[in-house]
Structures are given as structure tokens and as C-alpha cells.
Image (cartoon, rainbow, N blue to C red; front, side, top):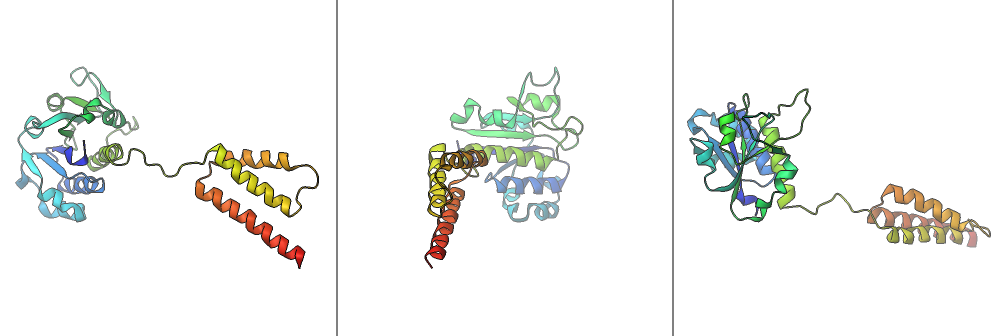
Length: 241
């Protein structure tokens, strides 16, 4: 499964500008297949291009269909996004994160994420054309998301799953690695006579407690080591002179 297998389906969108914004959201996450239930001539090309900016190629290559069933006929899953529950709707809805953990992501074939009209969302009948439902958690006081925002959230979740599953902003160093930093700090403090006879074990425990709570990155740990090593070297030069 790759991003090329993902299809974004917009069902009778009202605002041309929202189509342009959706194109940009898709391009941000490397998703290029746009399918629209409706007719191309019903939308204002200029408005779409203004909002799409450099993602207008997605609009240029968009495919048009008469129904969700037609738009998703070549897909192994068609997931309709909705904020509403009800006895005539899907028996259960999954979050975006649960959706990308679905076993079907190990299968080959297109996957469609279907979005309803901005004003009404997916009707009961339209949701029935989908094989499952997705609900993006939001405040009950104002649960309705802008169409392009919903597209962005889903595209981001799909991108994270398929392209950057192991990405993290940084990886905190282990306690074993932290011991090295604490030792270097204590060694350099000892070089400048910070400890008289006792006190080093207590000082090491002090630094280890603070630094472990800080969740240092490798770069931060190395920079701390450099600071104490340089400070010790400068202190030694002053003493010798």
C-alpha cells in the first residue's frame, strides 16, 4: 500500500474554493488522486486554482462520477467521513488512527476516503454506499469541520502511516547514555576542585535526576558535555597562569 493507492472522493461539494483547498491539502501529503461526485462544469476553475496554488494539477487530473459507488468501484475499501451517528447510519465509526490500522492496509488496491457536501455532510444513503465510517473527534460544541480541514487531517494520518511510520521529532537518550554525560560533568567538576573529599556521588545523583526528567536528545547531551569540558579547560589554564 502506497500513497498512490489513496483516492480522495468529494461528494457534491458546494464551494469551488473548498475543492482548491482540498487539492492543496492533498498535495501537502503526497496524495494525488481526486475523484468528485458531480460535474466539472458546475465548478469555477479560477476559484479552485487560486486556493490550490501549486496543487492545481490535482484538479486538472480529477475524475468525475455520478455516484459514490461508481467513484469507488475499483477500491478495496471506501470509508465515509461523518460526524453524525444514528440507527440508520453505520453501526460503528472509527477514528482516523484506527482507520489506518485496519488490516486492509496490507492488501493491494485503491482505498477511498469519502467526504460529504459542506452543508449536509454525507446523507444516510451516501454513507450506505461506503463500506465503513470514520469520525474525526472534535468539540461537541462545534463538531462540524471545514471540508478542506477534514481532508487535511485524513491525508496527514494516511501520510504518517504510509510514509513516516517511525518518524519522531527526536529520540531521548537512554539512561545508560545519560550516565556518560553525568560522568563527564562530574569528571570536569572534579578537575577544577569542585569536590573536596566527598560529594561526588550526591552531585551525580543530582544531575542524573534533573537530566533524566529533561529527556535530553543526543545533541543536547553532547553540547552539555562540551560546555563542562571547555569550562574545566579554561579553569585549568587560569590556575596554571
